[in-house]
Length: 486
Image (cartoon, rainbow, N blue to C red; front, side, top):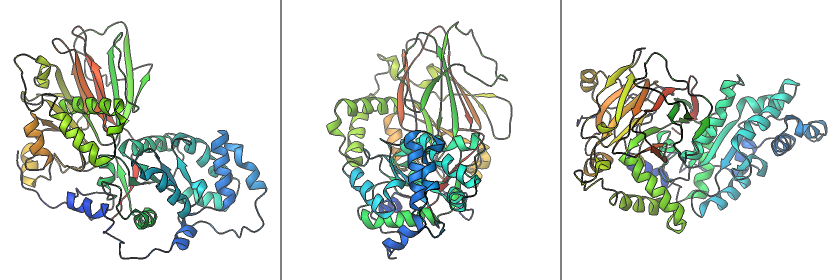
């Protein structure tokens, strides 16, 4: 599967390219882009800050959970307001618990650079509250003739300071605007505070919190107002399992009343009288198998012993060490069926590009983890799919992978040694397929549980030996908007 790489065309502003670890390191040090350019603090604040009456009206609407909650600020607008419309209005969502000791000091720095009312701590203000009440307040008064409110709503951009999970949370809430026709949808930039930060890496914002962070934050805010806007596919997941089974789902997976599957693929076998249904959305990847099992164990270890989670580097060391204890490297397959390949429990059906029919694809016997990947980055900036030569793409019937092409790249990881070589990019993963939709059918037996994860949020999935568990993935009909740093 080793395929020499070819340079990717990056001329289109809606396309992103895979980046090297060295590039990420340079970004983390704050040495790239505008490092030599001095950004005036007062000038930056002037461009980013909204007029006080708008800030207070929006904040009161959010606090009261009422679109009309900030009306008094419009009625009592100061006569000192000169009608100036903010050039590049920004709001920031920060997960102050992310980034170790950096969260609280970063929040204070952002409030100094913009304004206190435009920086939302996710412990206090949730993204859906901002969408339903804050933005709705601006829309209401913009429709009532307030030019400043109208232009602020039209030009506003969002910065998320957190990990991939936090970014996905904000993107999902902004998706409500698509569903309700409340255009335009604000694009999103990232200040990386998580462990993997693959979404951040994919759009040029780096893989870790900058060392020279005070000056880097000014550059980040400047670039968030000037960077081009890119499109990002998101993927809807529906999970149906036999009733009576209990799971502890991640935040990205919610219980729902009904499961709506594609009816063109006939279900093989009976359906129990009672089923449990869940649905959610991911932006980067879904996986099943050993990688999700390792992630699940690591998350539980970190929750039980939070003093171990001292920062991204510590987390990665513990994660790597923990993976060695889970049987991925030394596999006693004869005595432990749970460590055999996924072929024992899994059937995969896909729809290929520009095809409406489902086809079953074989699960390679040696594969112990299967990943459906949307971005170029997986596992802290690695590109396991690889940048493939045109001849290889043509031979396999693949197309060049992009984050906005309506396709997921499906690949497999074998034993831990194979995964290790893939993650240091000595070899590519085992390419399985590209798909616009995916259906997984899972049945237990000697296996009691499978492990799954979406965008780094893992869970243990119980399996029945009598009935199938179904999981279907299809693209959300609208795309999220990201700001590319370059």
